[in-house]
Image 1 (cartoon, one colour):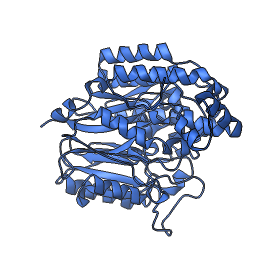
Image 2: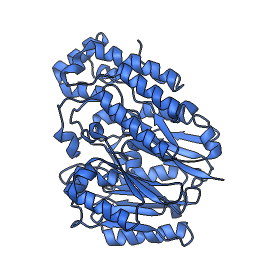
Image 3: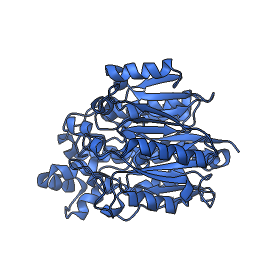
Image 4: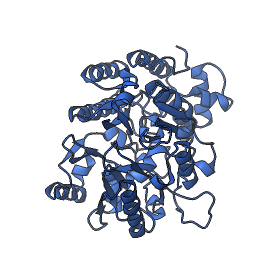
Length: 448
């Protein structure tokens, strides 16, 4: 049976703003409090989805979360009408309001970890929503993420949905941003590479000292158990704490893999040489002797600063229909000389067939690149028919969503604008209309 990887991108929500909420994310901090452009952000994301669809790949859309998340503010004791709740919270601390309006769920690489049916003992596609416990604005996402995933992957005969892990520091889970599946082909057995920042139950293990390690080994081990992935197909490796302290807050900012290729910086992992040997060995055992292609970027070729500034490793590494590889890279990769030169060399050496540059400036300035915006789901044709068809991108849905964005989204949003009562009703009305466009049912609990 034929399998394919489908990228499900997060649709940017109408309250996209720059609040600098993500400590440890350099771009998020740099652009904090600057005006954002929600309309441009959503259209840029849709244009990337359309590019992948035009390349012949199946492309899905994940709906945004309802924002503001007034339930957060009400749980903290702020009362009154919706606008009064926002105003009282703003007077107390504007960060709480920013957290409730954040559109961070657009980065669906953090939405969940996914295991295809080929690798689970029960033959189903498994999803575990990430608890994202390290950041307030993201820690509120998991319940609605689960509802949206269930509305998107609705057929219980094919899909198994698990709730988020316990909301505790021991089981801090950042989702697929720290998970890569390596395989000879999508329909074959795969090696699940789980990358963690720290060990909760081992205080002697290496750990960053400046920025938090957001993901624990224990969380990854729990997800592997929930998804019924065999021990031979699971490998747990640690991200280099030194690069976390330089702003590499997730593994997908320093490494990316797809099928038989792993593309990483030479400083990506603890004990890198041994770790790469372990990955190659485990990959060979799972794939019955196939060879893994490891493309390792040396620091003298691309520094950590340039890797972070360009989000080189947050590019999407995709397999074209002819079996070759291409990279969907942010435009910043073309503008930073060291990165541009290196990517040109990869094409010249036939490591990559092509590099496609995309404009994701609005997402990039908030700390997320092409790979942050998508959740990879490997499906066979039968499973694909079990996906909500209104969540699969075609030309009609693309044009409909572009029209919807142009109708409802603002082209400028500041911190002060979050106090505008009209923004609440605008956002809720837009999302109410979206549930009809994407046939999502009553996933939101707001009233309009």
